[in-house]
Length: 86
Image (tube, rainbow, N blue to C red; front, side, top):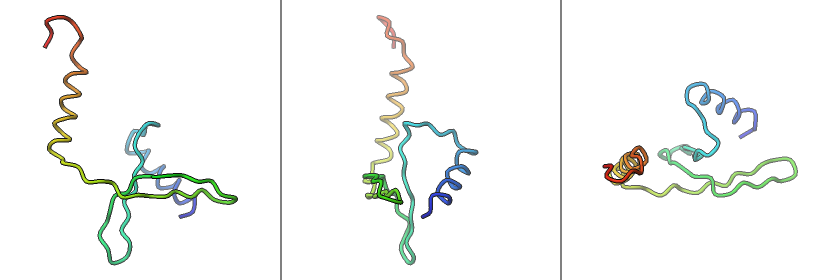
């Protein structure tokens, strides 16, 4: 994909969603005749005239457990560290 096309997609996303530098970058790709898959960035190489982004499959997660862990983290971070709290 050419850089201009990638940047145009990124700009459209940025208008609708607040992007943060530390966010995880993923790609959803569906080759012809195959279902869509989500990929993580494994490496980025700069070659003479191009940037090469190598993708790797994103491992599946247990969504209910993942959500419970996120909720637990939110609850503990929202609770002040005062003796007797929570």
